[in-house]
Image 1 (cartoon, rainbow, N blue to C red):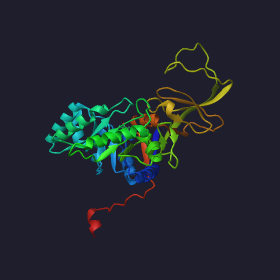
Image 2 (spheres, protein in one colour):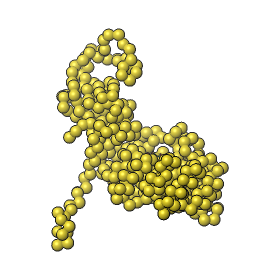
Image 3 (cartoon, rainbow, N blue to C red):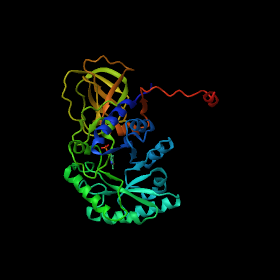
Image 4 (tube, rainbow, N blue to C red):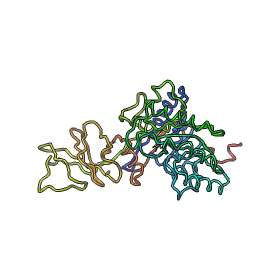
Length: 369
Ligand SMILES: *Cc1c(COP(=O)(O)O)cnc(C)c1O
């Protein structure tokens, strides 16, 4: 098989999804599976659906279009505010979008009317993380704006924390979202069908709080894909952290002096920290680089230490491992490394599923025979 490649274990993704869905169900919280780190992979989306998500979300309308054309039938949500220049595509590819700007709502409504449909809107509240969101004081007004647009339907409220500034989605923040939802619902005709509390960073709150108020949905990506929670980047109990593996091929192995020689200036990506080792290092070069993956987000196998990465080369100290040219080494990835690997055209994506393949009849006539 070609390298570098990203091996994707769909069984692990289904396991993580169903574990989280089962834990959140008693709280009255459903899960939107967020596929953005996988470029909207239909295989990953199907694995999430097998695990029990009720809808799918992605930040890129192109990824939603890919999911839509793969025949996925559940509601699709655009989880980044739509670009004004893409409203027609958004209405075509997404059932729902998260919104904060009246001018975009006007354009979405006009696009929906042009397409003889209605588009559902979740209005996002700013609760302190300082990324997307409308001030709490302006929420009722913007919800009314949605209600007055003929092409739009007000689906609900949402918020997003822990992305820009690391603000923790705790009980205070979630209670405020519930309070705002109740305030919006005081307007006749404004019954909200979703109150979307946030992302994987909300899991600790959701799973340790008895009364989750009006919150009835979370949008989960990282926890499903990597089995980690983003507040402290710790593994979540009972989830698999091995759904994604980066495989790279060795192109050189040599014993080299531990210290470089000559006058030292910048390396390809800036000043390198001085090397501590002395003597000789058993060094290998792998054909993978910063064009493929974030060097700070990969974990080599035990006993192997990454020494540095340039655009196309990863240099490792292989220690006592017997590593030869042509061998493959595998690495774990964090979210940043995963996103970079998924978006690199040089990295082959290999989705593995233990489920038996559906055997199709050789010819349509055979099926009816
Ligand atoms: C990325 C994103 C999510 C999912 O976040 P995870 O931490 O991967 O669960 C949810 N909502 C919004 C608005 C996002 O941008």
